[in-house]
Every structure is written in C-alpha cells, then in structure tokens.
Image (cartoon, rainbow, N blue to C red; front, side, top):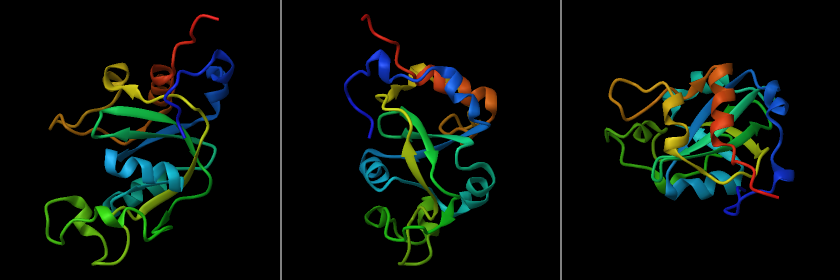
Length: 173
C-alpha cells in the first residue's frame, strides 16, 4: 500500500525501468472504495467498461493507476497480476451499490447480486509513492467535453508522462 511518508531516493525506481509499459489505464475509487481496492489488490469498473478493461489491461505491459474522485489524487504505479475478468470477486464493493434504475452507472450491476464494479483486475503495487495532487497530472489526461471525466486508457507517451508527473522528487540526502 502506498505510504504517506515521502520515499527515500533508494525506493524510487529510475524511469527507464518503466519503459516496459506499452500503455496505461486509470481506475477510479472514492474515499469509501479506495481502501477496499488496495486491501483486496483488486481494481474494478462498471460493467459497461468491460470491453475497455479487457482490451487495454495486460499483465506486465500496462501501468495501472488509481484515481481518487473524492480527493482528486492519483496513485500508482500498479500492474495486473493476471488477465482481467468479470466478477473475479463478486462481493467486492457490494456495500457501495446503488438502487437499480438510478442514473448512477453502478446501478447496471447484475440485479441484487454481484459487484457494482464487475470489470475487475487483480493488481499489485510496483511503487510505494504517496498519492499525487491533481495539479501534477491533470493536464496530461484527455478530458471529455463535460469537463468532469477523462479517458481511462492511456497511450505509451501519456503513460510515461503520468508516471513522471506523479513520481515524488527525491529529497536531499
């Protein structure tokens, strides 16, 4: 889990080590769901995002990030430990379900059973960086015209730029 203390220079991998990433993907959480994401080692999105997760999330090739919509902070870098799946953990985030028929996309979950975020991938952290404030990375994201959401998939260049932007600066020795 990411530490709240600043990392020492020895714990910050050199950016060339991240050259293996061919793309990136951002998953979203709130203050209420973030802890569960990290403790389960599981990220998820609503069912309508399944094809995107399946097409863009590959173990050891995709840099994964967790965006906290409550604090507007980005955490990373994570990697998938296996291919994504539907309802890998059908119990995950169930306490955060909304009523069927709601305008909230989580209401599309399979009835009263199953996770509200069934497009899931198991993850592990490859960095122990503290969350990064939005002003460090928001200019890198492709924002939708509504101005409140952004593309969750990232190309190689954007992935590397995002890693660089959320990476803490090494402190004085």
